[in-house]
Length: 224
Ligand SMILES: [Zn+2]
Image 1 (tube, rainbow, N blue to C red):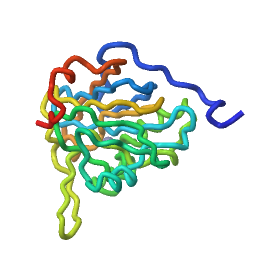
Image 2: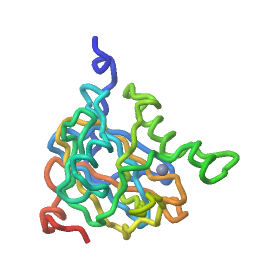
Image 3: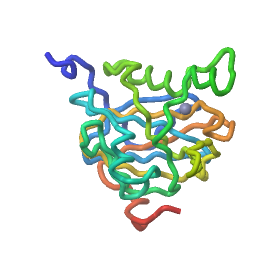
Image 4: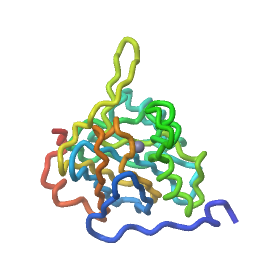
C-alpha cells in the first residue's frame, strides 16, 4: 500500500459559506474543476493557503515555481499556481483585491519569538496548519511557503527589504480559485499582528462545483 492509500481522504465542504475563526485553521477536499472562494469578511485579514495532491501528498503548491514561471512576485487574475512538480494545481479566476504574498512562511511560534519578542508565543498559522493536516498524513516538515491570500508585503526594489503592511482587502472582498486536480486545501485566519493590522479576524470560504454567480457577473479583469 502506498503512502497516499494509507491516508485518510478529506471531505469536501457542504454548500454555503464557512467561517474560520480568528487564529485558527481548517483543511478540506477541493475536487478538480471546483471553485474555492476566499472571503475577507471584515477586511484587512490574511489567509495562509496550502494545496496538496490528494493522491500523492508529496506534490504541493510551490511558491518558487509559481513566481518563476509568472516572472512576477505578485500573482493575480489569470495566473496559474504550480506544484513542486510543475503541474498547475490552481488558477486565480477572479481577484477583487489584487495583492497577495507568496514569499513568506506561515507565522509560527518562532515568528512570534524572533520577530515579535513574545515570551509565550502563539502557535500561529504553522501550528494551525499542522493540526488541520495531521489527519491526512501531512506533517510539520511537509508545510512549504503558503500562498498568503490578501497579505500585503512591500519590497524595496534596490535593497530587497521586505515589510508587512496592512492588507488592501476591504470587508467582503474575495479571491476565486479553480482547482486543476483533486486537492487537499488547508487555510487559516492568520495569527500574526503585522499581517492583519493587529486585529485578529475570521476568514470565510465556500466551495462550488460551478463558477459562483458573483464571478460570472463580473468581468475577468476584475482586480479592483
Ligand atoms: Zn499567519
